Length: 205
Image 1 (tube, helix red, strand yellow):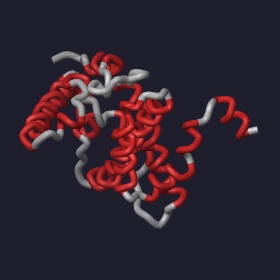
Image 2 (cartoon, helix red, strand yellow):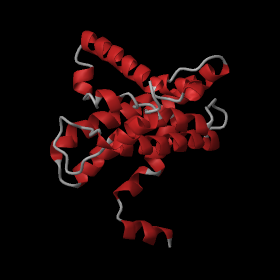
Image 3 (cartoon, helix red, strand yellow):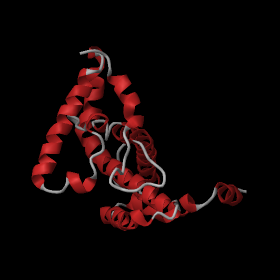
């Protein structure tokens, strides 16, 4: 037992992503998690602001789910998608390992606070929370994909064509979600990610 949960979270920075690809700039799990939380929050606010007739989750629920959506990778590492989904047997086995990793994380939380974390770690709620999670999880998934897409665009901007196919497939995945808040973000916010700081400041002036 013990209260090692927070020390484990601190180790997110040591888990490198995109391990099968040649990276111009590395990305760790902690950086990715923060970006997904930003994007999940943004997508929830976009949905609430521009599509008020559609049901949507509370932005803070999206943030909490995003903060812990990949927490098992502190123990398992970031298994590349082509391997994780190579066949059903590998995927099923990985889900079992992932569940055991989450169990180990929960055991490291101070006993009186375990229930406060459990739903977010396992991404499963009960009662009204289950309904809220059902609305929030698709936005977190879209935010996760959006973060991956922007990583691909960054690499392409560095002249790294290793990420060309990944960028195309990830964009197709984003569009296939057919979610209005995602499409709004792509149409209204994406272009600025390719600008320099001076360009962004000039556009604001």
